Each structure stands twice: as structure tokens, then as C-alpha cells.
Length: 261
Image 1 (cartoon, rainbow, N blue to C red):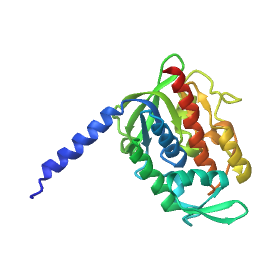
Image 2: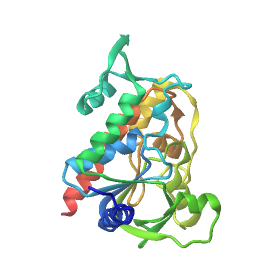
Image 3: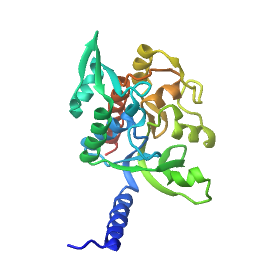
């Protein structure tokens, strides 16, 4: 059968537009496609909620691809291994409760399983603003990352979401927009982004989970965004806290959504 270039173009455009149009109103919008964001999206969609994920880069997966200093192995603790087991990622005990996994297998499997579960993922899309109603975030303002990088004067589009998860890592991209543009304090002790501290793996792993919570009405933070928002340590190439943070964010938002039904 002969291939038609126009049909190829039509197929891509029509299928993408259907996917994008269907994602303009969702239960949860996840910003950031690293391990915390992917795990949160996976658990939420498995619980029956409509979820879209927006990633500003071409590749999904955040910092997990490179392991530690481009040695593509990651470490998780016993509790983090439980999440890898759920996704079917192989891991191996190193010693003293430290498990290793192949970084490429881990993040590619998280991506694949999340999409297969039903999460719609949009890469090369940046969040440049939030939609507010009475000091609560109810949606996101989106544009192509290329537009942002080229500093083009192109107006964005908006989408509506009952909840937002900022899983953008060290950058805290959504929370920074709120801090800069919204005349209301964050739900941090200072009312501002408190900033991440230097590396302390043990404390950072514990505090990542503790700091996974609502940072502004309608917005939760997960992964390194949680520690950066609430002023805790970074952890380096151990990813158990990231995985567990995504699971917790999904559980917290799921509880809210159940009550609102």
C-alpha cells in the first residue's frame, strides 16, 4: 500500500488535537515529568481520575536518566523499592538496605506504564502562568517551550484543573509563578519559597515525604519541588523519596477529590 505524506500529516495533527482538546479540563494537572510527577499521575489515573502531565523538555524523566554524575544507576531504599516493584522495575540489594536499579530501565518503565495507564503526557509544553479564582489555582496557562526559549510574543492557551501538582524539581516552576504574581502567601512557614539546602541524603529523603503537601490552595508539591518550597535538603542520586512523594501526593489529592464528589 502506498503511503501518502498528507495523510501522515493529517493523522498526527488530528490525533494530537483530539488528545489536547480532551485534556483541557481534567481532575489533576501534573507539571514536571520526573519520577515524582510520573508516579503521582500513575496512581491518580489508576484511581479513576482524569490526569494530564506537562513537561517543558523533549524527554520525559527528569534527572533519573543520568543516575549519579552520568553513571546510569540509581539507588533506592527499602520503601522506595516497593514502588519500583509496583512498576515492574528490577532492583538488586547492594548492602545495608540500599538497592540499585538501572536508571534507563527505571525511568523508561515509569514513563511507559504511566502512559499505558491512561495519563496524557504533553512534552515541549511550558507552564507560564496559573488561572486563579478567589485565591485558588483552578488551571494552568500553557505555551510551547520553543516560544518561551525564542522569546516570541505568542499568546498562550489555558486549561482547567481541579488540582495541580508542581513536580518540576529544583526549579519549583509553578510555585515561583504563584509567589511572583499572586497577592497571597504560600502555605510555607514564611509565606514564600524557602529554597533548598545543601545535600544530606538521609534527612532529604525523610523531608521529601513530609513536605509533600499543599503549598497554595489547589496546588501540591512533590519530589524536589517539595523540599525546595519548604526549605529542606537535597538528596542526590537516591530516588526513593521521589517515588514515595509521588505516591503520597496522589493519595492526598485523591482524598480531596473523593470528598468533593
